[in-house]
Image 1 (cartoon, rainbow, N blue to C red):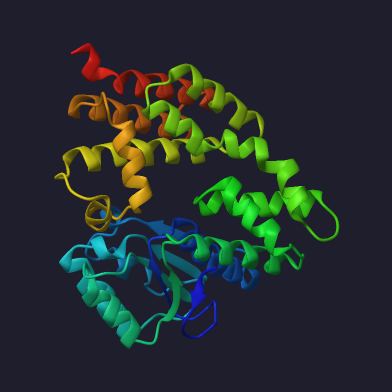
Image 2 (cartoon, rainbow, N blue to C red; image 1 turned 45 degrees about the vertical axis):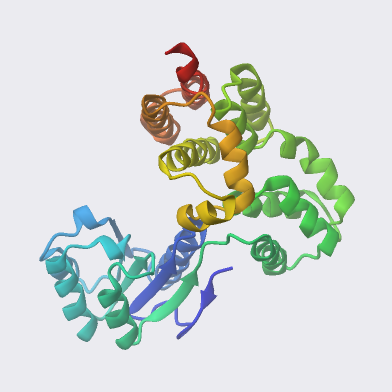
Length: 329
């Protein structure tokens, strides 16, 4: 779960969500919006990326309203704001407007640290949303999900769920929700096995692994099974993107030990070893083709196309072909 490290008032003038875990960042936003709309159902929500927050935009959004309406202004990727816009935000932090909640999403780290420090100095409510890279962190996340619902799950069940689903928090959260909705009483390892053994074998990451290995038929089979068992298409495009990007990162990195590359690329050593096996046959042009295919599929499953399943199938086939590009050269 996201950790709150300052005032727990959801309607504090400024909320600062820090980290790179998308699920936790989105939850931090949803919590604030829900609290605002519980107070005023007509709350106006503005969700902005850096390219949409130009100098002067924040002043316009936070200027006094004739009707004194409540607003929530969400600024994503705040570390990427322009210098002039950062000045606007810092000025606002010194005198926040009434009935307005500003939510800043910041990746943390050195980039944009001045804004991060200014928000903390101004007393912003802070929510930590760190990337969960360790199995123990994901296990704690699953336990927390069950506690939040008020349901009991055995330690073995929690571990089995992490083993079956993998590292994607959205999939883990969705799995907990499904189990809680479908199963009465304590959730044990046997229940998890009945629900997710098959899914573990054909998860979104199974689709991605088979595709980047050039095994189109197996990737398509895994894709169809995943969709039939309720895996969200957006999770599959995310896994495909991660798989192709990992190929690109490792292929452009200098050779070395898995441990050294793991530190350099931000991957666990076992992932380095797996990607090394998968990247045989890939070329830089193949990676570029595959990334375009993923982008097109992502647009297709998010409303840009009429048939998300077809968009995914097309991407899987294109990626599998790209994985064999060196052999065809």
